[in-house]
Image (tube, rainbow, N blue to C red; front, side, top):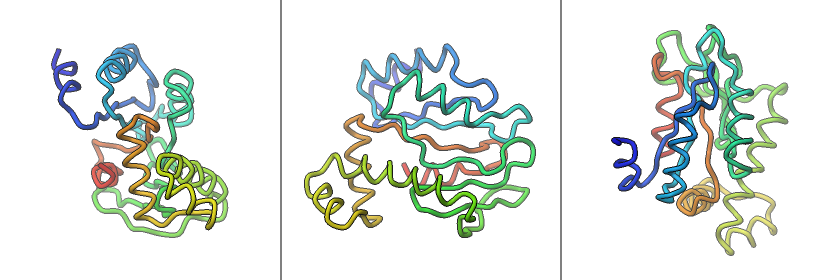
Length: 184
């Protein structure tokens, strides 16, 4: 009842998915109400630090159950008990956390991950451009968008339920939660 009441008045919802459990019945129930109330939503795959964490499986479950508007924004470089690194495809940066979590160090994405990150970034740019004619023209002319244009387009896309961004974190260890809050 509390979730339903909240979804009626919320500007945006966060749908948490446990990285070791994947999409559960409660996730699907929340999704029904998100659709009913047309609430813009962000998926967060939490507990990527769990020993049985499987980010990729959870992401695939989200995509298969909730459609092709689900677009990952980031992914853990090393999940499980050694989790301390997130590759952020929106900002094209890698976040490395200390053992205590908190504010991460920002470092370059390694060569081994740049192709995957760039592919995800391109999906985000295309999704942002699709929702504004001016951005679409600029995207076709320049092949990309700057950070402000990207933010504008993603805000429109999120508000119109044209995208459902996916983030990852360990809320318990405070790794990644600051980035999610910054995005909101």
